[in-house]
Length: 256
Image (cartoon, rainbow, N blue to C red; front, side, top):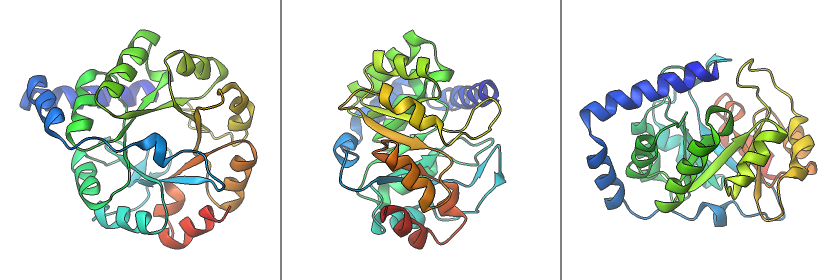
């Protein structure tokens, strides 16, 4: 499944590149307003912080919510206390787009994450051109030289990389790449099974000073409390917010 998702995302990026060449996207990225400081926004605090996600669908759950106005939803998240907004831009299985990202960036004053299957520089430049402050780099999808080069490119554009891991080896690779923001995804991207305890088994491998993000398997306040007790500074939440009253559910999560 991961290979399929990455392959589709790269094919879609190649199609966009045929319409808007790399040089033009690099110029647009240079002209974009500076990226916001995501590390400051997500820095450890007395309470857990939340990256709230604009998510219409997923391969494991199918369609979750229509979300005709991503900007309006993101504004609710910001008003409710979210520290950053994640926007799915993958179009085939998650039904997202870069237009969603642009709309959200125009509507909120907190950092915005482009959540997609990024495997080439073109995708990083277009994320910056669209207003992203953070890009997702999935260790399992990238060899080490590519991970390190994309991470370095992300930093050179003023953005932050959320480097996603699923194992001790992947955490070590993220650390070697210099990641300052490391996520542990409870969802196996090959089988899509969930393991809420995975974060706790890997958290101690993430060095002091690196922000720890728990991803997936966040359905209620008990899940947030579990991750917080295991050392999470931040939780990334999508499905639980878009399938309920987002304001009320976000307030529950932030009370942990």
